[in-house]
Image 1 (cartoon, rainbow, N blue to C red):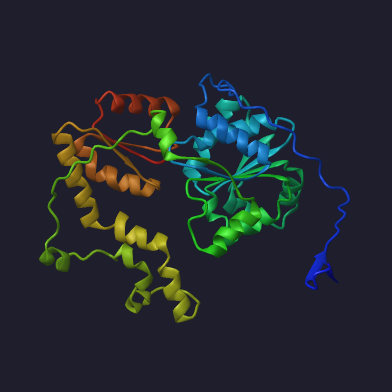
Image 2 (tube, rainbow, N blue to C red; image 1 turned 135 degrees about the horizontal axis):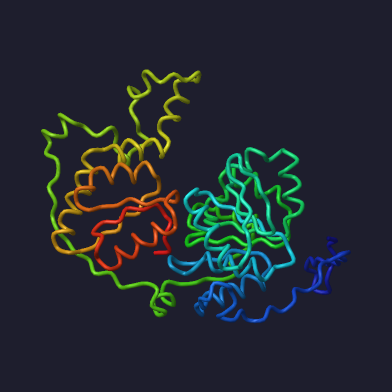
Length: 362
């Protein structure tokens, strides 16, 4: 970049760049048809448009609202790039098995699995980021990264986390598609990391168009009062912690924790959100009592109640409290026939309360 003097006396910069081996222009992607997938179900118009725009961009972020159909858009990407190996990265173990079932059915292929001790690759492989992070310097991971032709990341708002970033940085593929309902909702640093690892937002699926398509119902909000613990009861049986102030855990809670760490690190260790959620929500008897009072009111008024939980432990805790109300708890370990049967019973109002981990396309 060399400065030169223009005829007006102002500084002018002339720049000449020659790029060797530049990739050819991206081919035009034909609009994805509604009957593109193999499961016999048509894609919605916004799914066709969103997938087409992502494929045309070759890399970038898909901002897809709730119920927009991220999984089906992933399946379109997998099928479109049939000549390449596809690696799909996720963070949740329950969503992991749901994706294996759904994407396998939608593209008509066996799906590879990388989770914990399981490492079996196929043309399309779904992997837990935590597992790959543990193997980030192993030959198996290096081989996988070199052979990956298409990279897909679900819930990309977490891409700036250390484990996610280290894994994503080591996969050099050109085709990179990140999906989330809230991809750039954090501070500038995390947003820039996400964009740097993928690209800018290439497509957006809004709540408005999904609502017009009938996939989102207008909620009917009901207010009712449930009994709560009195101050005397709280003093006699205090909750283990306040989950909304988990960063302000008192130092007394650090006593008895056997950690070979500095006191400050010990406090940080027990102040993690998972610890706070476990003690402040799952094991908080007042929260469980409030949920039970809620469900009693719903059952009395004939309102089927779906409770979605993130962990099996939380689901079992609620099931123990709600079993007498006719509740059932389902997770990925239950057979597909059992899941479908209970879901049908719930839809037909024969099952008043359904507790489940994220195994249904709700």
